[in-house]
Length: 67
Image 1: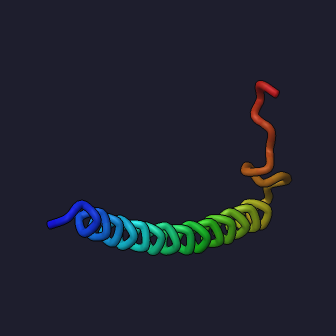
Image 2 (image 1 turned 180 degrees about the vertical axis):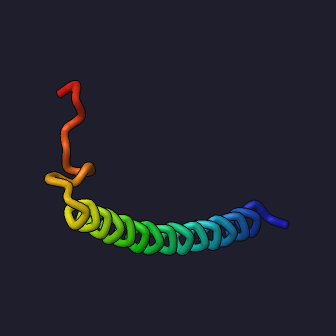
């Protein structure tokens, strides 16, 4: 097998690996965006619940005592 053939095979393999990794990163980006939206929604719900229970400022929005 010639050096050129080996290099072509290696390059094809590396291109496939790069494509696979790109797909993984794209899926992870979508999952992170979805989870971020869910966390924001849950934080808003919890803040509303705290206000409904008589709290003045939702705990998530209060500054810690050391500030």
